[in-house]
Length: 224
Image (cartoon, rainbow, N blue to C red):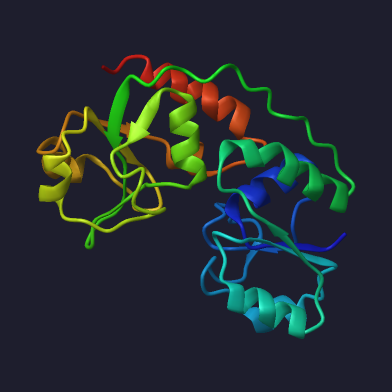
C-alpha cells in the first residue's frame, strides 16, 4: 500500500509496522523519505502526484482545509483524532486495520496521584503552554503531573509573569515543537526549577506510547 503520512507519530508507527510511507512531513525525522512539506503546510500538489492509496492525517496536527482539499482531489484520507491517552488504543487499532497491520494495545497502570504542578512551554515568542485537552497533558496527568494551564484550552498564550504568579512546582521544557535547550534555562529557571524532557515522548503517540510512559515516569520520579 502506498501511504503518505502527514503526522510524525504516525510515520513512526507505520514504519514499526513495516508499512513505511512513501512520503511524510519534514517534521517526521525521516531523512530517507520524501518530504511533502509540514503538518500545517503540506505540498498538496506533490501528494496528489505521488498517487497514494491512503493519506493519513490527524484532526489536531493537520488543517481541516488540507483534509478537504485532499478529498476534493479524489484521495482516500484516514483521519485520526488523538486528544488524550485514552484515545490511543482505539485510534491506532483503526489505523492498523486500515493498513492491514497489527496494533499491540497500550496497557495502562493505575493513574498516579497528583503530586506536581508543571509549566510546560511549547513555544517561545510568543510564549505558549501545554493545556487541555491534549495528549501530552493527559499523559502527564496519568503520571501525577498537572499543568498550570489545564483549564484554558489546549495551547494558551501567556507572558512569563503570569506563569510565575501560578507558582508551578517545576518547568518541563520539551525538545519540540520549540527546541528548548540550556540557552533558555535562565528564563525558565526564573519560573521554577527546570527539567528538559524528550518532546517526542511527550507528544508523539502510537508505538512509542508504552515506552514513553516508562521513560517519563522514571524521569519525573526524581522531581519534587
